[in-house]
Figure 1 (tube, rainbow, N blue to C red):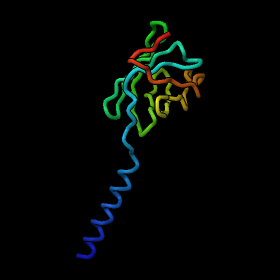
Figure 2 (cartoon, helix red, strand yellow):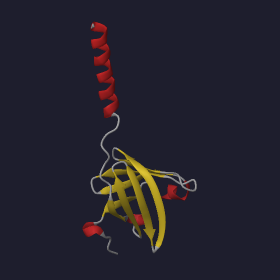
Figure 3 (cartoon, one colour):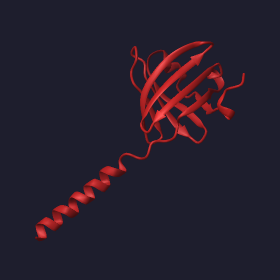
Figure 4 (cartoon, one colour):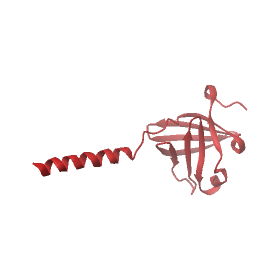
Length: 120
């Protein structure tokens, strides 16, 4: 009986440790406006818990993006050998890592749109 109690306790500990590894996903859904070098870009994110579908728009050209949220980090799925990681901090979404052409945008950020749209 003592062995069973220890096993159950150990399983509970493992579950709680494993449970803390996945923090609740940051709320990143909505419209984000590019700042600085990204000022001509709009990032529109539809979020369903951890999954995201997004549209990166610049002057009428749209790039479809899919990915997922892990805590405060948004990781895009690779597309044409390009991917991005963004970090949500308050009303900013900063590009922390990127590959391909998107690598040039590392360090740049988006701000949450006021009123649901970006004004030029």
